[in-house]
Image (cartoon, rainbow, N blue to C red):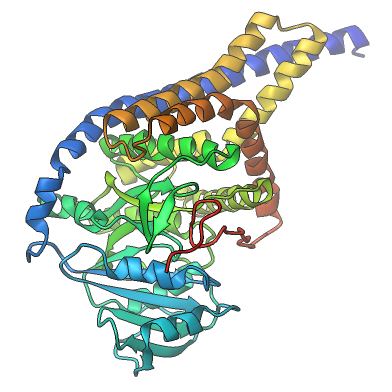
Length: 482
């Protein structure tokens, strides 16, 4: 029989091993993020140099850039759809079309489009290569020959994108969100890898937080950092994720995510894999993973690139409830994608994607909230039992929070010395302030949201969630521009 004293000794030994294991795990993950940062610096400098405005001016009005179809899924976007579509139509690009798909909206999205753009009925003029839910109507615009629209039964974002993919006339397609504001020259910057003689299957751009900025006619005319803590902290988070997180993966050849808000793809590859998986809640990541598998299968040299200077602006949640729903959905989609494609894990058949990227996303992203919560609880319990000293607890806190702070500050530095999308001096100071407070409350909150996502996934929760928007991506107190 094991007495109480022996049981306590076993528990203490277990806690010591657990705490040290969690510390080593966090050290490894954060060190890998630091490696991504180092790899991102030369990539950032290279893109900065070749992305100068004078180089873009040479491309405007030329026939060397490939024609692009812009795919715009829309669901209950009545308040923003007209301005957003106008921003897509007026992008600085020699040849592109805009295909808007109203995915069973319950508000006046379709009516707003018909009125603003004088839509008229047309017959279906293309084969439905990818199966979708019923398309109830096809429309063209009397005012803008580049614009076509579809009205279809609800099927989700992926299904709406597939309907637009069927209708696309051009060899490259750009998937965007209906509430996204794309900078006028973003397409010219996005196609740059295709023009440099590289083998490219897809290109992703940078997503930035629009909350707090001034919008006119679907354009960000004065980029600002929101003064409220929740969107402000997310601004730092987005900078860190895009400026070195995804840029660093270019060097490792293994980007697993191209944001659904700004992603350019070869249409032939997308059709070959059957388009988007409408059942996946993060259809953009699932698409990229399936593309990696497809490219390996056909022995294609095409790569997935991330380019930092094409920018799209999006609104982020301003309430804790909205953030919880968003992060829960993102993590459920991540779990579903990694579970579905688990055969890629440590599989040399998939090269660096199978040996580096997939394992990192599994152990460093999917399981991170589980490990971090266990670590917090283990350290707290060890402190209560007096088996871990304060120096170790402080070290754990530094690794868990301090490392993230360092990476955030470096992302801000990279932003300030490169693209400087926030020209006001006060915004730089505000970013530093939000970086300082991110690790104390916000980080733990998002860890909890992601942890809850495991239970949601196991229950088969397929809800998309609803985010209350502030209206046409305006700055607080602004009215939507005409």
